Length: 382
Image 1 (spheres, rainbow, N blue to C red):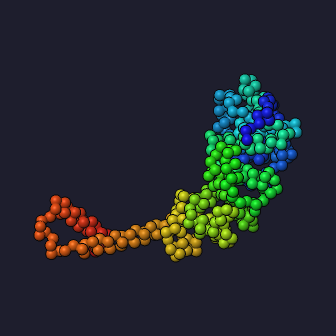
Image 2: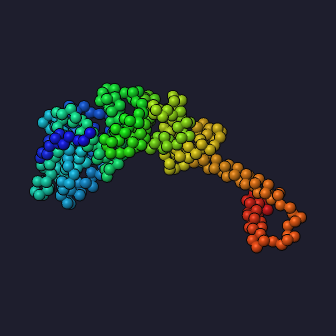
Image 3: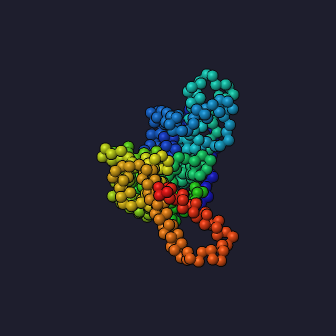
Protein backbone atom coordinates (compact mmCIF):
# COMPACT_ATOMS: atom_id res chain seq x y z
CA UNK A 1 0.00 0.00 0.00
CA UNK A 2 1.53 3.38 -1.02
CA UNK A 3 2.55 6.00 1.53
CA UNK A 4 -0.13 8.54 2.34
CA UNK A 5 1.87 11.73 1.70
CA UNK A 6 -0.87 13.81 3.31
CA UNK A 7 0.55 12.62 6.62
CA UNK A 8 3.76 14.52 5.84
CA UNK A 9 3.79 18.31 6.39
CA UNK A 10 6.75 20.65 6.02
CA UNK A 11 7.51 22.91 8.98
CA UNK A 12 10.48 24.98 10.24
CA UNK A 13 11.26 24.06 13.86
CA UNK A 14 13.60 25.66 16.41
CA UNK A 15 16.53 23.41 17.34
CA UNK A 16 15.56 23.75 21.03
CA UNK A 17 12.24 22.10 20.28
CA UNK A 18 13.78 19.04 18.59
CA UNK A 19 14.12 15.96 20.79
CA UNK A 20 16.61 13.18 20.13
CA UNK A 21 15.02 9.74 19.87
CA UNK A 22 15.86 7.55 22.90
CA UNK A 23 14.61 4.60 20.84
CA UNK A 24 16.93 5.31 17.92
CA UNK A 25 17.09 1.97 16.05
CA UNK A 26 20.85 2.39 15.67
CA UNK A 27 21.21 1.44 19.32
CA UNK A 28 17.94 -0.35 20.03
CA UNK A 29 18.52 -4.05 20.74
CA UNK A 30 15.50 -5.27 22.65
CA UNK A 31 11.85 -4.26 22.99
CA UNK A 32 12.31 -3.98 26.77
CA UNK A 33 14.85 -1.16 26.23
CA UNK A 34 12.26 1.06 24.54
CA UNK A 35 11.41 4.33 26.28
CA UNK A 36 7.68 5.24 26.33
CA UNK A 37 6.98 8.21 24.07
CA UNK A 38 5.47 10.24 26.91
CA UNK A 39 8.88 10.14 28.63
CA UNK A 40 10.95 11.14 25.59
CA UNK A 41 10.90 14.87 26.48
CA UNK A 42 12.16 14.23 30.01
CA UNK A 43 15.44 16.22 30.40
CA UNK A 44 17.16 13.23 31.99
CA UNK A 45 16.16 10.99 29.07
CA UNK A 46 17.37 13.60 26.58
CA UNK A 47 20.70 13.98 28.39
CA UNK A 48 21.32 10.23 28.33
CA UNK A 49 20.35 10.02 24.66
CA UNK A 50 22.58 12.99 23.74
CA UNK A 51 25.59 11.46 25.50
CA UNK A 52 24.92 8.09 23.95
CA UNK A 53 24.80 9.59 20.47
CA UNK A 54 28.11 11.40 21.05
CA UNK A 55 29.88 8.40 22.57
CA UNK A 56 32.65 7.36 20.17
CA UNK A 57 31.94 3.71 21.03
CA UNK A 58 28.58 4.09 19.29
CA UNK A 59 30.45 4.87 16.06
CA UNK A 60 28.00 7.54 14.94
CA UNK A 61 30.96 9.77 13.95
CA UNK A 62 29.36 12.88 15.43
CA UNK A 63 32.71 14.71 15.71
CA UNK A 64 33.33 14.29 11.98
CA UNK A 65 29.85 15.59 11.21
CA UNK A 66 30.39 18.58 13.51
CA UNK A 67 33.67 19.39 11.75
CA UNK A 68 31.97 19.17 8.34
CA UNK A 69 29.16 21.52 9.37
CA UNK A 70 31.60 24.03 10.86
CA UNK A 71 33.64 23.92 7.66
CA UNK A 72 30.92 23.87 4.99
CA UNK A 73 27.76 24.95 6.79
CA UNK A 74 24.59 22.91 7.24
CA UNK A 75 23.24 21.91 3.85
CA UNK A 76 19.60 20.76 3.93
CA UNK A 77 19.89 17.89 1.45
CA UNK A 78 18.09 15.09 3.32
CA UNK A 79 14.94 15.97 5.19
CA UNK A 80 14.65 15.70 8.97
CA UNK A 81 11.53 13.67 9.84
CA UNK A 82 9.83 14.36 13.18
CA UNK A 83 6.63 13.63 15.04
CA UNK A 84 5.01 15.96 17.56
CA UNK A 85 5.28 15.00 21.25
CA UNK A 86 3.37 17.53 23.34
CA UNK A 87 4.92 20.94 22.50
CA UNK A 88 8.15 19.37 21.21
CA UNK A 89 9.11 17.32 18.18
CA UNK A 90 10.77 13.90 18.32
CA UNK A 91 13.32 13.24 15.57
CA UNK A 92 12.46 10.10 13.65
CA UNK A 93 15.11 10.41 10.95
CA UNK A 94 18.10 12.72 11.28
CA UNK A 95 19.29 12.08 14.84
CA UNK A 96 22.97 12.22 13.83
CA UNK A 97 22.55 15.63 12.23
CA UNK A 98 20.53 17.06 15.12
CA UNK A 99 23.06 15.67 17.60
CA UNK A 100 25.85 17.36 15.64
CA UNK A 101 24.01 20.70 15.70
CA UNK A 102 23.29 20.46 19.42
CA UNK A 103 26.99 19.62 19.94
CA UNK A 104 28.02 22.73 18.02
CA UNK A 105 25.87 24.92 20.27
CA UNK A 106 27.20 23.12 23.35
CA UNK A 107 30.90 23.31 22.47
CA UNK A 108 31.23 26.43 20.36
CA UNK A 109 28.48 28.72 21.65
CA UNK A 110 29.29 32.38 20.86
CA UNK A 111 31.98 31.40 18.32
CA UNK A 112 29.37 30.31 15.81
CA UNK A 113 29.15 32.70 12.86
CA UNK A 114 25.87 34.52 12.24
CA UNK A 115 25.50 32.75 8.89
CA UNK A 116 25.89 29.29 10.41
CA UNK A 117 23.71 30.18 13.40
CA UNK A 118 20.91 31.11 11.01
CA UNK A 119 21.28 27.74 9.26
CA UNK A 120 21.20 25.59 12.38
CA UNK A 121 18.75 27.44 14.65
CA UNK A 122 15.64 26.98 12.54
CA UNK A 123 15.53 23.53 10.94
CA UNK A 124 13.25 22.63 8.02
CA UNK A 125 11.52 19.38 8.95
CA UNK A 126 8.86 17.00 7.72
CA UNK A 127 6.27 16.46 10.45
CA UNK A 128 4.48 13.10 10.50
CA UNK A 129 0.86 13.52 11.56
CA UNK A 130 0.73 11.20 14.58
CA UNK A 131 -3.00 11.77 15.05
CA UNK A 132 -3.59 9.42 12.13
CA UNK A 133 -3.78 5.69 12.90
CA UNK A 134 -1.35 4.96 10.06
CA UNK A 135 1.32 7.29 11.50
CA UNK A 136 3.26 4.53 13.26
CA UNK A 137 3.40 2.53 10.04
CA UNK A 138 4.65 5.68 8.32
CA UNK A 139 7.46 6.09 10.87
CA UNK A 140 8.58 2.50 10.51
CA UNK A 141 8.45 2.62 6.74
CA UNK A 142 10.54 5.81 6.59
CA UNK A 143 13.22 4.25 8.79
CA UNK A 144 13.18 0.97 6.91
CA UNK A 145 13.47 2.54 3.49
CA UNK A 146 16.38 4.66 4.69
CA UNK A 147 18.42 2.08 6.55
CA UNK A 148 17.87 -1.47 5.32
CA UNK A 149 20.38 -2.02 2.55
CA UNK A 150 20.67 1.71 1.84
CA UNK A 151 23.58 4.15 2.01
CA UNK A 152 23.13 4.48 5.79
CA UNK A 153 22.84 0.85 6.95
CA UNK A 154 22.30 0.01 10.58
CA UNK A 155 24.70 -2.33 12.33
CA UNK A 156 23.64 -6.02 12.28
CA UNK A 157 21.90 -6.15 15.66
CA UNK A 158 19.78 -2.96 15.30
CA UNK A 159 18.95 -3.95 11.72
CA UNK A 160 17.76 -7.38 12.86
CA UNK A 161 15.84 -5.84 15.78
CA UNK A 162 14.05 -3.44 13.43
CA UNK A 163 12.96 -6.12 10.97
CA UNK A 164 12.02 -8.56 13.73
CA UNK A 165 9.85 -5.93 15.47
CA UNK A 166 8.10 -5.12 12.19
CA UNK A 167 7.72 -8.82 11.36
CA UNK A 168 6.14 -9.59 14.75
CA UNK A 169 3.70 -6.68 14.43
CA UNK A 170 2.71 -7.96 11.00
CA UNK A 171 2.47 -11.56 12.24
CA UNK A 172 0.37 -10.52 15.25
CA UNK A 173 -1.83 -8.21 13.17
CA UNK A 174 -0.70 -5.06 14.94
CA UNK A 175 -1.18 -6.33 18.50
CA UNK A 176 1.86 -4.87 20.27
CA UNK A 177 1.54 -7.02 23.39
CA UNK A 178 1.38 -10.18 21.32
CA UNK A 179 4.30 -8.95 19.22
CA UNK A 180 6.44 -8.45 22.34
CA UNK A 181 6.23 -12.14 23.26
CA UNK A 182 8.90 -14.11 21.33
CA UNK A 183 7.01 -17.32 22.08
CA UNK A 184 4.49 -16.17 19.46
CA UNK A 185 7.17 -16.22 16.77
CA UNK A 186 6.78 -18.62 13.89
CA UNK A 187 8.36 -18.11 10.50
CA UNK A 188 5.79 -17.57 7.75
CA UNK A 189 7.07 -16.69 4.24
CA UNK A 190 3.99 -14.56 3.32
CA UNK A 191 4.60 -12.33 6.37
CA UNK A 192 8.29 -12.01 5.48
CA UNK A 193 7.33 -11.03 1.92
CA UNK A 194 5.03 -8.26 3.16
CA UNK A 195 7.76 -6.84 5.42
CA UNK A 196 10.28 -7.10 2.59
CA UNK A 197 7.95 -5.18 0.27
CA UNK A 198 7.44 -2.48 2.92
CA UNK A 199 11.19 -1.87 3.30
CA UNK A 200 12.23 -2.63 -0.29
CA UNK A 201 14.54 -5.48 0.73
CA UNK A 202 14.73 -9.12 -0.32
CA UNK A 203 12.46 -11.62 1.47
CA UNK A 204 15.58 -13.72 2.10
CA UNK A 205 17.11 -10.85 4.08
CA UNK A 206 14.00 -10.62 6.24
CA UNK A 207 14.01 -14.39 6.77
CA UNK A 208 17.66 -14.43 7.88
CA UNK A 209 17.45 -11.41 10.17
CA UNK A 210 14.19 -12.25 11.96
CA UNK A 211 15.35 -15.81 12.62
CA UNK A 212 18.70 -14.54 13.83
CA UNK A 213 17.09 -12.06 16.20
CA UNK A 214 14.68 -14.70 17.53
CA UNK A 215 17.68 -16.92 18.35
CA UNK A 216 19.34 -13.94 20.07
CA UNK A 217 16.22 -13.51 22.27
CA UNK A 218 16.23 -17.19 23.17
CA UNK A 219 19.85 -17.05 24.31
CA UNK A 220 19.16 -13.93 26.39
CA UNK A 221 16.25 -15.74 28.05
CA UNK A 222 18.25 -18.93 28.71
CA UNK A 223 21.11 -16.88 30.16
CA UNK A 224 18.76 -14.69 32.25
CA UNK A 225 20.84 -15.35 35.37
CA UNK A 226 23.78 -13.80 33.54
CA UNK A 227 22.19 -11.53 30.89
CA UNK A 228 25.42 -9.69 30.07
CA UNK A 229 26.81 -12.91 28.62
CA UNK A 230 25.05 -12.45 25.24
CA UNK A 231 26.11 -9.16 23.67
CA UNK A 232 25.66 -7.37 20.39
CA UNK A 233 29.36 -7.77 19.67
CA UNK A 234 28.86 -11.54 19.44
CA UNK A 235 25.92 -11.22 17.03
CA UNK A 236 28.10 -12.06 14.02
CA UNK A 237 28.98 -15.40 15.64
CA UNK A 238 25.30 -16.36 15.74
CA UNK A 239 24.92 -15.21 12.14
CA UNK A 240 27.84 -17.42 11.04
CA UNK A 241 26.31 -20.34 12.95
CA UNK A 242 23.00 -20.10 11.09
CA UNK A 243 24.94 -20.09 7.81
CA UNK A 244 26.38 -23.55 8.63
CA UNK A 245 23.90 -26.47 8.18
CA UNK A 246 26.02 -28.88 10.25
CA UNK A 247 26.12 -26.45 13.17
CA UNK A 248 22.35 -25.96 13.04
CA UNK A 249 22.01 -29.74 13.24
CA UNK A 250 24.60 -29.91 16.04
CA UNK A 251 22.74 -27.33 18.14
CA UNK A 252 19.26 -28.71 17.36
CA UNK A 253 17.99 -25.70 15.41
CA UNK A 254 14.29 -25.51 14.52
CA UNK A 255 13.85 -23.65 11.21
CA UNK A 256 10.22 -22.72 11.84
CA UNK A 257 10.50 -21.59 15.46
CA UNK A 258 14.04 -20.23 14.89
CA UNK A 259 15.20 -21.60 18.23
CA UNK A 260 17.67 -24.20 19.45
CA UNK A 261 16.84 -27.26 21.50
CA UNK A 262 17.31 -26.77 25.25
CA UNK A 263 20.53 -28.77 25.09
CA UNK A 264 21.66 -26.82 22.02
CA UNK A 265 21.08 -23.47 23.71
CA UNK A 266 23.16 -24.57 26.70
CA UNK A 267 25.89 -25.83 24.35
CA UNK A 268 26.13 -22.60 22.40
CA UNK A 269 26.17 -20.50 25.56
CA UNK A 270 28.92 -22.70 26.98
CA UNK A 271 31.07 -22.66 23.84
CA UNK A 272 30.51 -19.10 22.58
CA UNK A 273 30.02 -17.14 25.79
CA UNK A 274 31.31 -19.28 28.63
CA UNK A 275 29.24 -20.68 31.50
CA UNK A 276 29.93 -21.90 35.04
CA UNK A 277 33.26 -20.11 35.34
CA UNK A 278 34.52 -21.66 32.10
CA UNK A 279 35.84 -19.22 29.49
CA UNK A 280 34.36 -19.23 25.99
CA UNK A 281 36.25 -21.44 23.55
CA UNK A 282 34.71 -20.03 20.33
CA UNK A 283 35.46 -16.31 20.37
CA UNK A 284 34.96 -14.94 16.84
CA UNK A 285 32.88 -15.54 13.73
CA UNK A 286 35.53 -16.23 11.12
CA UNK A 287 38.87 -14.71 12.19
CA UNK A 288 41.40 -15.68 14.84
CA UNK A 289 42.46 -19.10 16.06
CA UNK A 290 39.15 -20.13 17.62
CA UNK A 291 36.24 -19.17 15.42
CA UNK A 292 32.82 -20.45 14.38
CA UNK A 293 33.91 -21.22 10.81
CA UNK A 294 36.69 -23.58 11.94
CA UNK A 295 34.38 -25.18 14.50
CA UNK A 296 31.82 -25.82 11.75
CA UNK A 297 34.52 -27.56 9.67
CA UNK A 298 35.41 -29.85 12.61
CA UNK A 299 31.74 -30.69 13.22
CA UNK A 300 31.21 -31.44 9.52
CA UNK A 301 34.42 -33.32 8.75
CA UNK A 302 35.82 -34.51 12.09
CA UNK A 303 35.05 -37.37 14.44
CA UNK A 304 33.30 -37.25 17.81
CA UNK A 305 36.76 -37.25 19.38
CA UNK A 306 37.77 -34.22 17.30
CA UNK A 307 34.65 -32.32 18.38
CA UNK A 308 35.25 -33.25 22.02
CA UNK A 309 38.72 -31.71 21.84
CA UNK A 310 36.92 -28.37 21.46
CA UNK A 311 33.76 -28.87 23.51
CA UNK A 312 35.33 -30.78 26.41
CA UNK A 313 39.09 -30.12 26.33
CA UNK A 314 38.58 -26.44 25.29
CA UNK A 315 41.19 -26.62 22.54
CA UNK A 316 41.13 -23.85 19.94
CA UNK A 317 38.96 -24.66 16.95
CA UNK A 318 41.71 -23.50 14.57
CA UNK A 319 44.17 -26.02 16.01
CA UNK A 320 41.69 -28.89 15.81
CA UNK A 321 40.66 -27.88 12.29
CA UNK A 322 44.31 -28.09 11.21
CA UNK A 323 44.67 -31.66 12.48
CA UNK A 324 41.35 -32.71 10.92
CA UNK A 325 42.48 -31.32 7.57
CA UNK A 326 45.79 -33.18 7.90
CA UNK A 327 43.93 -36.44 8.54
CA UNK A 328 41.75 -35.83 5.50
CA UNK A 329 44.80 -35.19 3.32
CA UNK A 330 46.47 -38.31 4.69
CA UNK A 331 43.35 -40.33 3.98
CA UNK A 332 43.19 -38.93 0.45
CA UNK A 333 46.87 -39.78 -0.16
CA UNK A 334 46.23 -43.35 0.94
CA UNK A 335 43.32 -43.64 -1.49
CA UNK A 336 45.43 -42.18 -4.32
CA UNK A 337 48.33 -44.56 -3.64
CA UNK A 338 45.96 -47.53 -3.58
CA UNK A 339 44.54 -46.49 -6.97
CA UNK A 340 48.04 -46.00 -8.41
CA UNK A 341 49.16 -49.42 -7.14
CA UNK A 342 46.10 -51.13 -8.63
CA UNK A 343 46.74 -49.51 -12.01
CA UNK A 344 50.47 -50.26 -11.97
CA UNK A 345 49.77 -53.91 -11.12
CA UNK A 346 47.89 -54.14 -14.41
CA UNK A 347 51.13 -53.48 -16.32
CA UNK A 348 52.84 -56.61 -17.70
CA UNK A 349 56.49 -55.95 -16.85
CA UNK A 350 57.73 -58.66 -19.24
CA UNK A 351 56.23 -56.93 -22.26
CA UNK A 352 57.47 -53.39 -21.46
CA UNK A 353 59.66 -52.04 -24.26
CA UNK A 354 59.28 -54.97 -26.66
CA UNK A 355 57.64 -52.77 -29.24
CA UNK A 356 59.52 -49.64 -28.18
CA UNK A 357 58.06 -46.73 -26.24
CA UNK A 358 55.49 -44.17 -27.34
CA UNK A 359 56.91 -40.59 -27.57
CA UNK A 360 55.65 -39.48 -24.13
CA UNK A 361 55.90 -42.75 -22.19
CA UNK A 362 59.46 -42.20 -21.00
CA UNK A 363 58.57 -38.64 -20.02
CA UNK A 364 55.63 -39.91 -17.95
CA UNK A 365 57.79 -42.62 -16.33
CA UNK A 366 60.34 -39.96 -15.36
CA UNK A 367 57.61 -37.68 -13.93
CA UNK A 368 56.10 -40.56 -11.91
CA UNK A 369 59.53 -41.52 -10.59
CA UNK A 370 60.19 -37.91 -9.52
CA UNK A 371 56.87 -37.67 -7.68
CA UNK A 372 57.40 -41.04 -5.93
CA UNK A 373 60.86 -39.89 -4.83
CA UNK A 374 59.29 -36.76 -3.27
CA UNK A 375 56.67 -38.87 -1.48
CA UNK A 376 59.31 -41.27 -0.15
CA UNK A 377 61.35 -38.39 1.19
CA UNK A 378 58.29 -36.91 2.90
CA UNK A 379 57.61 -40.32 4.44
CA UNK A 380 61.32 -40.62 5.37
CA UNK A 381 61.67 -43.77 3.28
CA UNK A 382 64.48 -42.47 1.10
